[in-house]
Length: 194
Image (cartoon, rainbow, N blue to C red; front, side, top):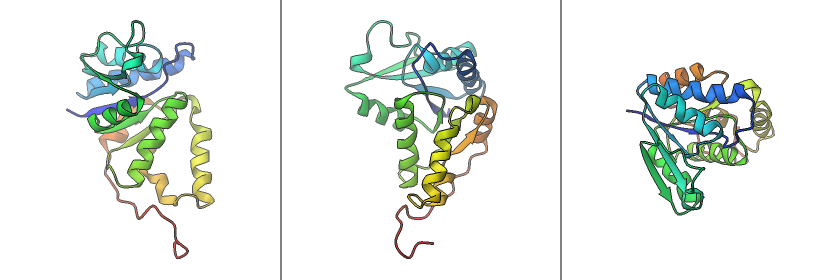
């Protein structure tokens, strides 16, 4: 069984279309026989994805730091729940458990999680698929910033190929189903770099 980590917001006051996309993503993970790994939150995109997965009989594994493991924050129906000492350990645990990553709309924590797995893949620390679910164009400006970074040679253009950006949960699943790892060159620029 593949374990797919979903990053996403813990906000419950976002537009319903985002929550619907996360719920549908959870459904599709379960329908493909894949386990959801997530930050264990009951609210926002995290909770919606977990409820979607469970609605189709899927398995859900949550990872939460100890200071957040208080009533009202964790999704109480996790099939397995890991409690970590801090946020850094939580992120590492989610990365270690997972065979791929899907970033959904979220805040600063989601951006950090996404950028970390992109950076680690660029550094050849993993070969796992990374998908950005760009619901309602949520990530448009971030994706443009990534492209600007490459255009100005702060990163190599091939770094833009370590992730895929898609518009729908169905396309996110398709991206993982069709994923083939392509090795990139060295991360570092030198005066001789093309």
